[in-house]
Amino acid sequence: MADARPFHWEYTPEPIARELFRVEGGRPLSGTVAISGAKNAALKLLAAATLTGERCRLTNVPEIEDVRVMVQTLTEIGVVVDHPEPNVYEIAAGDVDWLFVPLEAAAKMRASFMLLGPLLTRFGRVIISNPGGDRIGRRPVNLHVDAMRAMGAQIDYRNGYYFATAPGRLRGSEVRFPFVSVMGTENALLAATLADGHTTIRPAAQEPEVDDLIAFLLKMGAQVKRTAPDTIEVDGRRRLRGAEHRVTPDRIEAGTFAIAGAVTGGKITLTGAPCEHLGAFVDVVGRAGVAISCGTDTIEVDGSALSERGFRPLDVVTAAYPGLATDLQPPVSVLLTQADGTSHVHEAIFEDRLEWLTELRRMGADVDIEDGHHATIRGRTPLHGAEVDISDLRAGASLILAALAADGTTTIHGAHHVHRGYENIEGKFLGLGARIARLAEGNDTTNP
Ligand code: EPU
Image (cartoon, rainbow, N blue to C red; front, side, top):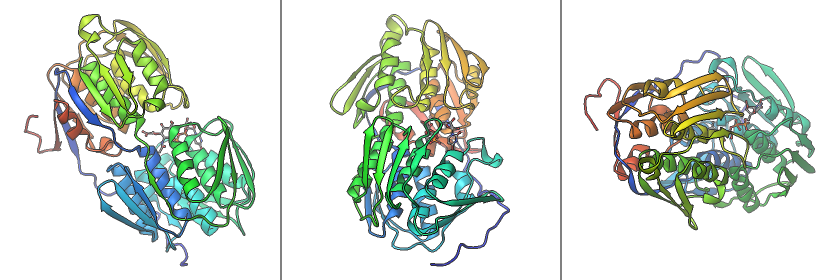
């Protein structure tokens, strides 16, 4: 295997295709929408496929920008990735040419750091860019690095890169996290599958996407068990085999469409929807007065209470699973603008996830952001069309929801953020009767 290729410390990002959404709101959505595979499962499954030299096949993979970036990153290090048909990816990591994950990948997507565990445990070394550095935001990866060190890795940090080696093999260990981290758990889990001996990970994240990863690893021959809700135990194996797996459905996409039905006063059915993964969310929107019911793999949402008696205000707090997902806080915040009274939102997981509410304010929402973790939303305020900017994926999808509920036309800049994580979002909304168009910036004269 070749050595890591030379670095290029200077980084000039590729130009992004600037796009916007133009939405004409005020129409109740109706009909059926199919939920895609989960982004936050698919990205980890793609990383996990590098644990073996045998071919792996993933189906129900969402066709989104983050998957494209992960596939490109894998291809660049020498992994063969085939895409025989939409939503199907086949990965063969017989050998890799470069044990180097560059800044280009990390700058585009934090989940590129998911390659640390599998490459280190299988090949004994990797150089990987820090996705949490000052250049691109504040999210640290110290827990991932500490977990690898607990398993015997030597890791130095220089010039924005982690240089990780595992002389011999990683060794099974007690991995203790100070608090729950989804990707920290997943990185430790992937590393432990090929480590020498027994690993216990605690507290382990309980998100359904972690269990989807465990299901895939079991098919690959790994010895993994969730022995308590917050504990995962792994007996390391010498090698894993190829496997086929269908990506679990995206509970965050499902929640987003459920709120779209509610805030437009519409009636929609989600198919292939993982109601069993949405307990806290279903409870919250049900308490707000949205009629939401679960079938075997469908969710029915009826937002007619909006015009009949209005939604009810709520105090909500985000939490690790099984609590209310932080990724569903922005859609729920849009719902609360349509509740009669004062609601409080406590974003307990991330510090920077309430800032987008200033954009919602431009559309007529009455919102106070008290600090990085707390906001007050007073309703019910009619929303109106405006010109707004998307700062991140979940905020972007939520501005579309607000625009669908608003009177008039909204122009939403920064559409590329949304394509990172939602498959064909405008097509799905069009299928529900929305008036939405995706246009190139500067070429935006067409109305939806
Ligand atoms: N944290 C640390 N050090 C670490 C890792 C995390 O301090 O080494 C902190 C974070 O800053 C945060 C908390 O721990 O305050 C929890 O973060 P976690 O590690 O659980 O988040 P993550 O694994 O980086 C995943 C999802 C996020 C989702 C969170 C929480 C993926 C690719 N990302 O991130 O999804 O919000 O879990 O559920 O799985 C999204 O899809 O839009 C998204 C941001």
